[in-house]
Image (cartoon, rainbow, N blue to C red):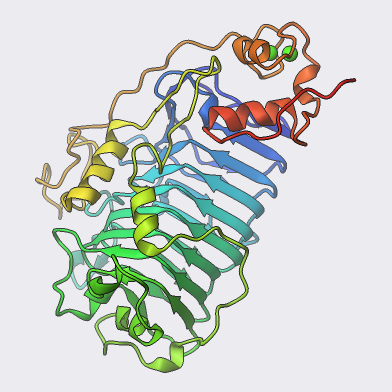
Length: 435
Ligand SMILES: [Ca+2]
Ligand SMILES: [Ca+2]
């Protein structure tokens, strides 16, 4: 399987499913690009071994899996993220990016970052199982440091995270480092060291999120059980309608009084709790509109069958399709059942740091990197990017390569409608426009 996202402006479709073992980092620099993982047959697409960076504007990524993992053939362990919207190190990031129904896991540095970017939405995605004791060689006080950290969200503004699932990380779930963001309707499950923390200059709205304890969570008496750690005096947060196992009386009923939201905070790393109130913003920071649920309702929606992560709605012939893989299915079940653990390694026989034991019980429950069916390509006789059965069922000409980019009655091109329908979106107002 070969990545094919150089042509621009363009939609990138996949003729085959399966695991793409990258040979180097991928840096997306060309703007106006849609990467449509929902077009892949078989079990869909997985990108592994190296990091995908997006530094281009106007990029849409849907229904893809990013699982870097700890193969000996992969990128440098100290920077092996699975996905980052933003630059590899310093410099400008991306603008106008949508990440939808992505599954990211098994990063060795973090798993899924946004950095120095603006006007970014990350929605209905899974960020799970950052690798803890993996290939790290960082050491502190003579001990190797575990580093199962979910997401470093540094710099940038007008960034929205809504309806995402974070599960099984040590910390940084996520970490805001000088970023202005709207964090809404997310589920944060099972942090073994700490959950969300904020560094200097961050401006973050926490609205209607659900923080749930897991088996190795800090004990309820620990400040770190509270979920949201704040330290720097320049950091401000707005809290509304969140619930957690720490404030569980608000998870199943009406939102509690605004005052009680502050019980979910503490001074990072193990300081007083709740955090000092000078961090508190009385009003919500400017944000993009989001169709909000209550914390409890978003929890139910996110964990519903096939809802979050890389899944698909339909095949080109209209038959329903679900491509949630075994890993995501396991993680979702572990959230519901309050089970699972932070894991160290994906490849049990692969290299490991000598300070960490090989083959620990917390290795990947699947045993090793799962297998994925490649499937058979869908027939696209005219090469316009739309498979024949969809063209026929929607009144297009499967032998006319020009009609895919014509506009339908709902204002989207036929290719866009095709991609959206394969992704499981409900299409309204569709119809052919007479020439
Ligand atoms: Ca076609
Ligand atoms: Ca056609």
